[in-house]
Amino acid sequence: LNLGLQGFLLYMVSKEERVMSKFAGQMHLCDFGAHLDLCPGGPNCVGPGGTRITPARLYSWEMWSTRMYVRDALMALFPDKAQDIYDNVDPGEYGLESYFLRLTCCFLFVLFLWRDLLGSQELASLLYHVPGKAEPWMYEEEDAAEGVSPSEPLPDAGGEVVKFKVAGMPVYWKLLNVLTVFIPKVYLWFLAVDVGMVFLMETSDIEAMIINAVALNFVLSIDEILRSALMSPMVIHMLENFEDFEISNCAQPTSTEEAFERHLNDKGWGLWSPELYLKLFPPRLICMCAITGFFICKYYSEHCIASAEGGFVSNEIKMPISSQ
Image 1 (cartoon, one colour):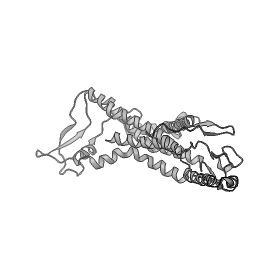
Image 2 (cartoon, helix red, strand yellow):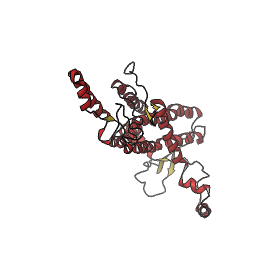
Image 3 (cartoon, helix red, strand yellow):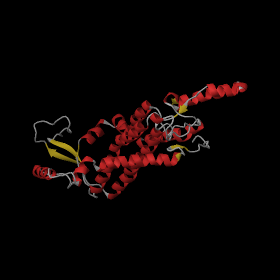
Image 4 (cartoon, helix red, strand yellow):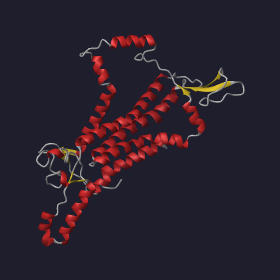
């Protein structure tokens, strides 16, 4: 159910941008008005209407298309005054209100979704390290305390507490989890980033950019909504009380003495120490920037062409064969 809902919503967002917008004649935004502070004499200042963009003549697609329709309708109704209407009725231009906010929202969008990618990475690590043989995931423990905390399972009649832990699973169960959980989650994550990036890159308004960057995160949070709404209280209780599966990690200190020793070594860092820059620019941040840059470049390569004045303009828009 979760995969179906997430896939359907992503399909509909992609359909709006790649199909329905073309029926409306909407060109790709690309770099129209990207350097608005330099317009009308700077680069990227010629709009899709062929005129120079200025802050006072910049509109969203909905407003600009309506103003264009009114001008064209007047010219069709009064053909003898078509030139006067063209000279005096200014529909403005369609363009981007903030180029740097667009890049920031794209990065924030990837940042919002990074937690889901880390969850897939942890799932892959768990499936790899869990023993490949069947082991019980429930066990009973002596209730040494006088009472049982409300967060733990209730004790049985023998004074023992039923607890839950991650244990071994047969190899065929691991393969089933990889095929039905891990691969679909990773695929949906990259699909969400791809579709969401196009959606944000095609958004021209400042307010809409910020709202859309946050709203798109909703798609990959549907699994949590389904969990709280449809799972039985018993299953939720079991999931919340599972003991963590310990995976040895040499990068993390295992004792106070080791942590203190690492602290003393860190005090010896200098300006040219590579470890210092790994802390200032962690690999995770670099990966986020790389993924953001990759999908932005992918958008430009698929939807835009280089302009003679600099920057990128929309490539040729063709009418879709069908609405599917």
